[in-house]
Structures are given as structure tokens and as C-alpha cells.
Image (cartoon, rainbow, N blue to C red; front, side, top):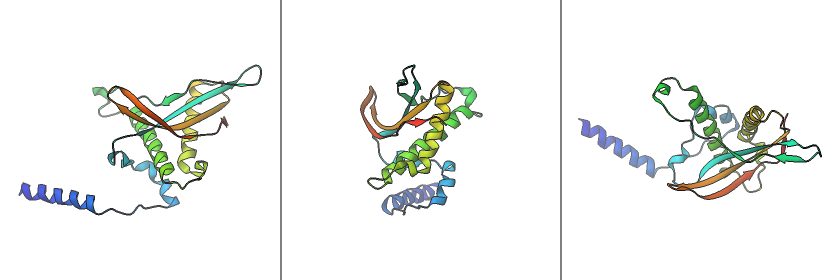
Length: 171
């Protein structure tokens, strides 16, 4: 009996590889996107989207002094105590899911499309502002960019900047 279940499962997998489902689109779906993970990382091995951001402060001469670009975000180390209750890592996974959704939106956008109109862009801008405000309370401006990184076992092999935001004043 078990062999029938295994064969049925393999047939189902084969059918999902052969028949492609249409992509469902609509502005109302953005309200539900945070509940569903972006499974595009299963499609191919290669470049992975990373969010980088930096903050700046005004100098005494009135010029912007930028801090170094920093990656959002380093993964938190795992331990056995976080097995059942792990809000920090769960929040990090939700934020990385937002970055993945933003990458998918940029990838699917037509040429010349302004990404500032995307809901995911606005959510990322808010996320970056809140995070940088905690780290740099005196900062006045921010900027973020989406980079595609190709890694191997020894480190990053290649980096491609997919989008750089304009300089944004803190609200």
C-alpha cells in the first residue's frame, strides 16, 4: 500500500513540473503577501537578493557624511532554546521574505518602471528607516540598494546591483 502512495506522489511531482500554473496578479494580493513565503529560491541556484543600506548625517559644513553600506541582515545563530519560541529569527525570516518579494517585483516589472510605486518598495523603505534610526539616531538621510550576490563555499564570487534608491530624508 505504501508503494502506491510513493508512486502517486512521484506522479504528482512530475505533473507539477510539466504543467505550469498561471501567475495570479492583483493589487489586493499585496495585502496578503506577508502571510506567504516566496518560494522562488527553489527555481534556480545562483544569485540571491540582499538588501544593503547606509545612513548619513549633516556635517558642520552642511554636506552629507555617509556611513558604510551594511547588509540587512546577518543571520542569527541557532540554538536549542529557540526551537519552540523564536520571535527574533521569525521576524528576520519575514523581513528576508519581504526582500525576496521586492526582488520578484523588480524582476517582473517592465523596463523603465519606477519601483517607488511598488508596495514592497515602500515597505522596505520603512523597514530601512526604522532600523537605521535605531542605529544612527543623529542621521538625517538614508539610501538602500538591492544587490544580487553569487556565493560559493569560499565567499562572494560576484555582485550585481539591481536597484539603488534615491537619497531619502528621514521622516
